[in-house]
Image (cartoon, rainbow, N blue to C red; front, top):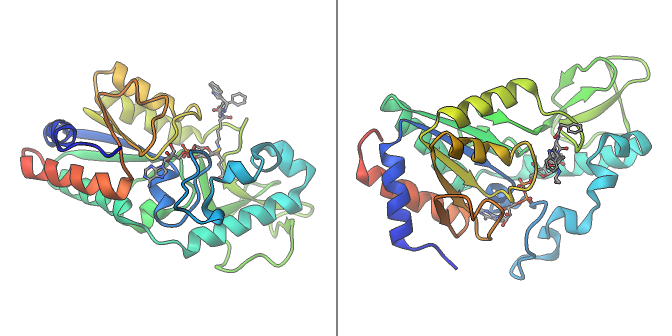
Amino acid sequence: MTTSGHEISEAAGFLSRAKRVAVITGAGISAESGLRTFRGAVNADLPADMRALWKEFDPATLATPEAFGRDPAMVSKWYDWRRLGCLAAEPNAGHASLTGLQERMEAGGGEVVVLTQNVDRLHQRAGTRGVVELHGTIMEWRCTRTGTRMTPPDVAFEHYPVASPYAEGGLLRPDVVWFGECLPEAAVRAAARAAATCDVFLSVGTSAVVYPAAGFLLEAKEHGAYTIEVNPESTPASGVVDASLRGTASAVLPRLLAAAFEKGATL
Ligand code: BJW
């Protein structure tokens, strides 16, 4: 089901009057850049290699510190494969819309903070500034001994696991947040502040099941923000938000923002 013009128009009205907007994004916003989501329904229109990652791979054997401890070669190789996929991907109209919203609102004295669970850096490549990376980034790797971060070259590592150049016996691991690991403190602080102070909170392309990230929408709502979800499927957030806009990010965001820009005000 696709969202109606009336729903878009009402949400756009709130957006056009907002001074501060917080946006949380998930894997769905990058799906149209060719990157696989983790969960979600299998879309029959998609080729098999675009199926949700957790339908083909087991998160417990790949996305936990214990998995890396057990089999660092396999985990590193899998993440390096995904890193190369991110490098090959291009931002899409969904990412570009959020950059446009940020530029337009900042020009009018407003603020847009993009909180992302994505590790792919596509928001930054689309020109969004100050992106808060809640789950780190696959584009940087860090030494297991010293914590030193580095940006790998644009080609696959030669051997797995990857020996750290920074400490004897250390390994390089992707600088992402695995299950059971804490999110970066500064990112959590920035997200909590954005959620507590925004007038509109927009949730785009996330299944809203992974915490603490999924909690920021609830915090924003408790603080009185108008909440909007953009997702082709329903999620646990759908029953909570003020506007649930059904459709893909690249279809809905340009429509929503065009309607908001038309309504003017601070935008
Ligand atoms: C489109 C679309 C299109 C498709 N347009 N949309 C409270 C309750 C229960 C459990 C917990 C809790 N608090 C903490 C936990 C434990 C755990 C957790 O949340 N588990 C739940 C899954 C049950 N959380 C953690 O462990 C976190 N750490 C933590 O809490 O630390 C404190 C602590 C420490 C020790 C002990 C206890 C507490 C860390 C979470 C780390 C998540 N890491 C991953 C992997 C990152 C690295 C990698 O890339 O591999 O992050 S898991 C994976 O899920 C990834 C994502 O960022 C994250 C969220 O997924 P996302 O982005 O929502 O994607 P999908 O695929 O789920 O959804 C895509 C959506 O897009 C779908 O809805 C589609 O419909 C939609 N879509 N096409 C728009 N074109």
